[in-house]
Amino acid sequence: MRNIKSFKKMKKNGSKISMITAYDYSSGKITEEANIDCILVGDSLGMVVLGYENTLEVTLEDIIHHTKAVRRGAKDTFIISDMPYMSYHLSLNDTKANASKLIIEGKANAVKLEGGTKSRLEAISAIVDCEIPVVAHLGLTPQSINKFGGYKVQGKTNDRFNKILDQALEIQKAGAFMLVLEGVPEKLGKEISEKLSIPTIGIGAGRYTDGQVLVWHDLLGLSEFDFKFSKKYKNLSLQIKNALENYDNDVKNKKFPTKENVYFPIEDEKTEQKI
Ligand code: KIV
Image (cartoon, rainbow, N blue to C red; front, side):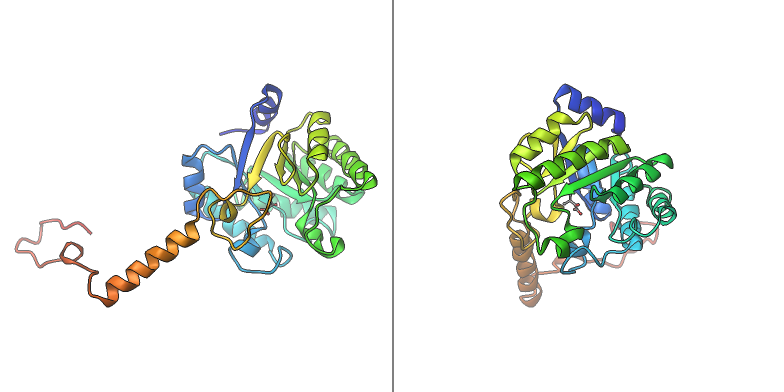
């Protein structure tokens, strides 16, 4: 299993880091079999798994539940669990207790939280002080959509560009071991990646971050979204729909089950039959 030291080494050697979101046993298992470097149990699960409009309704219990399932499928992969909205905003004691639940109950290796303001830096330090590795997240942070007025690329003006750059440097000082950069100009992704010694993972942050992360459903064509920054490696929605239509057709036309799918009485009770 990779760890925070091996991620740092990968950055140093110029080896790109692959990260993918996963939300259940089978996605965890396939991800591990595909040798992806790390898994994010993202709060994007609120949208792609639970059908919410945004990520704000996701609870700590939701993330623990899904992290446990992913861990059962991916025993040897580094897992990062998202801290949901309001699970690290109220007090440092709450923040530490919530982060530790993701580690102890969910069996994650690290937690991720969004933002780079003073209180977020304090949260990062407090969690790191509990021996929990922290991934920070800057740029288009989805938990701030109401403040941003929607999903908008961040850091486009000089002021905002420099603000995010400063926050990235502060995040590193606060003790985060990795930084996710979402929805920012490529130039900002590049500059931050060059200035930081911790690895940066981009999603819509251009070609020069130290690694990339994609959402499971976007990569596999299971979501209705078609983002410029993403890449659909398969169109599974279509393939699944075709399979279901074929099944429906077979049932209605008595083509399933066939003789191969049924059990027969046997003479000798000890004879095993394949389930
Ligand atoms: O929740 C999530 O999936 C994320 C990624 C998009 C980085 O935060």
